[in-house]
Image (cartoon, rainbow, N blue to C red; front, top):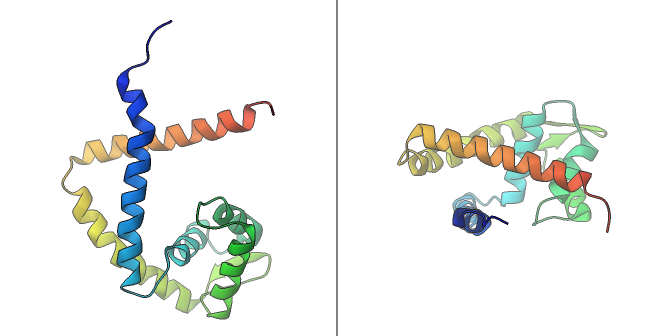
Length: 149
């Protein structure tokens, strides 16, 4: 039996540490605008999926986060609807006001993200993104293919 490279053992911890620190920075940054990260995530998800975003798919995606469960995701979408940021029953879309907020927040978040990432070679960032996407896809495929215990 071969011993896995030491870096394998560092991968999960390093990823979790980066996620915690980046999430804390994002929370602080968004708090200056009076916005919760969950609002940003929901607006970004709906904008990414487009005007035919299934309410159920959005709810399921949000409920899969550590910050929300299914009830909290439904409550969040209800609040965003009452606030005039999203609309739709079975399919969700950003309202004009929601689109403006999304565009504003994307620029607001993008500037410090660009400043942070600009310290590293672009090729390294691209490799990291590809690697994390492949790891996430593989983990999801392995998880769904695994037999129930």
